[in-house]
Amino acid sequence: MHVYDDAGQLHVFASPPRRIVSLTPHLTELLFAVGAGDQVVGVDAASDHPPAARRLPRVGDYSRLHLERILALQPDLVVAWLGGNRAADLHAVRQLGIPVLLTEAVRLDDVARLLALLGHTTGHAGTGTQAAKDYRARLAALKARYGRANRVPVFYQVWDRPLMTLGGQHWISEALAVCGARNVFGDLGGWGGVVSREAVLRREPAVIAGGADGPNLGRSWQAYRSLAAVRHEAYVQVDADRLHRASPRLIEGVEALCRALAPYGR
Image 1 (tube, rainbow, N blue to C red):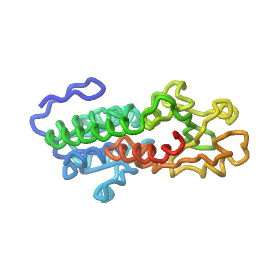
Image 2 (image 1 turned 90 degrees about the vertical axis):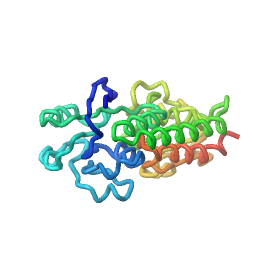
Image 3 (image 1 turned 180 degrees about the vertical axis):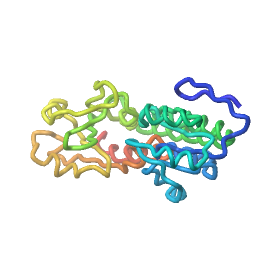
Image 4 (image 1 turned 120 degrees about the vertical axis):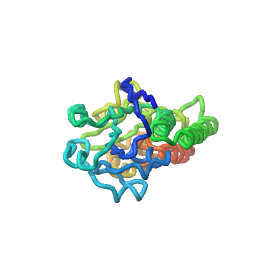
């Protein structure tokens, strides 16, 4: 079996990998979603879904991998994220003679693409293909239901100290568009970064949104009554595990975001 990963590397497998280590929570969810859960023997420290993943051995986090733990699990494949795992750690894993499948997730459709890729790689091509089809159908339905020409301007707050937001290349910016909204910092390069409150005021968002794991938005912005979103208490917070992870549950996060934003688009 021949598989190209998202770095363009060719992997050749005589048979589907039977002992897989996942290095990010969203990849763990994707592997379970395509039916490869029984093949996963180790995960990163933050992998907490599905519940079965919580019982698996931990091999480190985004700041450090424990190579001895990975080696002890005798994996025949490590699945990693180009945007989240350190290049030095992945190089060290390869030095142990363990294949590393590199994946990337930037757009909403990357979830469907990765479902198909991981399904094929792990010997569950049919399940992966069907899961990808179902995900794309739900995404298309959301676009049809909530898309509008007059998009609601939204400031998406990742954190408040420092004040951080997301740029136009992040899938949440795309999710806002699906929901008939517009990221007021969509012109920021890359995935986003630190912005000033003055810059937010100049962009005049009608809604302030964020993950439910973040600070209370009402308390964070109560002093800025000149902003329409503050005066109207237009705050939206969505489950971060769903919206902030490129997993199959991302579509649930987008659905929740669309429902929450819908009243502001009338």
